[in-house]
Image (cartoon, rainbow, N blue to C red; front, side, top):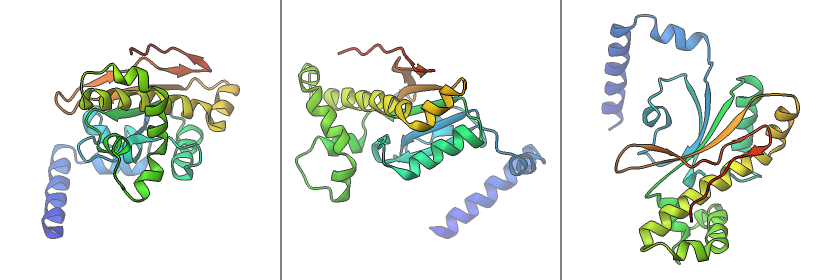
Length: 205
C-alpha cells in the first residue's frame, strides 16, 4: 500500500508540474494562507478540498470531533502561529454531520482516551438536554450536538489570550463556525461569528 501511495504522489506531482511548471516553486517560497481551519480528523472532511481551496490557502489544525480545549497546547500553538506569524484574519471552526466523535460522546460505551478528549461534548449534551430532546431521532440529536460543539468551539477560541491580545491590538480577526454535510458536500454557516469581541449568534433549537 505504501508503494501505491508513493506512486500516486509521483503521478500527482508530475500532473501539477505539467499544468504549472512553477507550482511547487511558488508554494516553497512562501506560506501566506488567508484562513486558519480547526476541523475534525475525519478523513472525509479535508479542509482545502471541501472549501475549494488550493494548498497554501488554508492553515489547518485537526483533531477528533474538532474540540477546542483551552489546555490543548497543540491547537494553541497553531492558533498563535496563525495569528501572530501568518497574520491570518479568518479563523474557522468546522464540524460535520455524522461525526463519529460526537456519536462516541453520546454512547454509554468505553472508548479509552477518547472518553477524556470528548468530555466537553458530553457536558454540552447535558447542558442542552432539553433542546436536544426535541429532535426526532438519535441522528438528528447528534447533528444538533455537532452544531453546538462548533458554536462552543468558536467561543472558546475567542476567549483565548491569543485572540484577546490580537483584538486589543486592533487586529481585524473574525472567528466563524461552519458545519459540513457529508451527504451533500455543502458547508453551512452557523451564524456564530465573533469579531473584535462582538458576538453575532443565531442558534435554532
